[in-house]
Length: 374
Image (cartoon, rainbow, N blue to C red; front, side):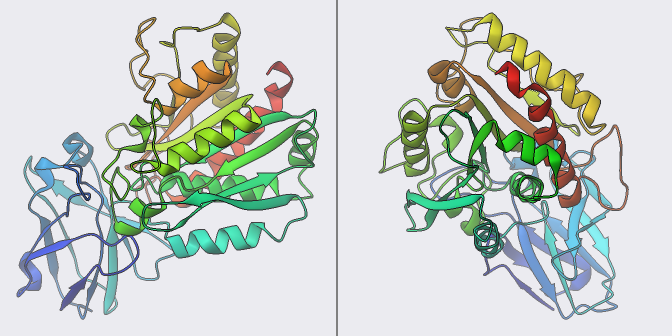
């Protein structure tokens, strides 16, 4: 048996691995940070071998409540990720399996590698509707990609979509894959109609360094990008600095920041209710969008989510609050589950890349239904 994680987004530390029936592991912390929860590793040489794997430091993870009723993701081919019954005892996370093949991957959620990201950028670049550019470089020297979709911004609404500020929330980039597929389908009448009214600015991965390093929540410097929007810098959070500068140049009429939530087994939206200059129009648009999305997608709901900020209590270090306040627009955070959607559970796959893609299409549909209100 061999355990490895020396690959894109890999993260695991081996404590004990001399007996497949009692493998002891630990999750590595994000660089310069105490955050940890993301894991991704491969076990080899275990076909038809009963295995029990235990993550010993699970109880100290950033969101330990996220382990409750959680099921580990596993894959033989790195394309189809199924769920395994998992036990959390308040300290350790463990699961058992007898692999059908020699090699098996485990992860916190289905990974979206930087290699797949590069393939996605190359593929969408083929469309005559797309222009791509590099806003700048990360601290590790990676490209920060911007994809524009449309016939030009003149006279059109400026729609910004960003994802994966927190790199371990890989469901956010699966969502982006679905959004690209939907918007670039030239036989899709919704996309055609929407692109007559909107110009899209899309950053499908805000945190390439954290993604490649196998971080849960931070970039190469240990910065939580979703707490950097008030005062980003090229030394600490170039990703936010570069996107913020581009937003200032283009303006923003609609903004969606796509995330994942460790604990809540639902899809929901977090708004901007605590910003100082909150307007009736912003609140009206927020309600319209959520009400429509509930109708369009059974995977979305409004009963469960985060507490609404009290008036004037917004945190301008957070993206949604900063964008809503600065640009006076509808800005939202979409949260998807690491576990499953309890409203429509799938025992085999849980919340999955395929359902992330479907939700993206529903979100774009919703924008189409209300774009004239922006």
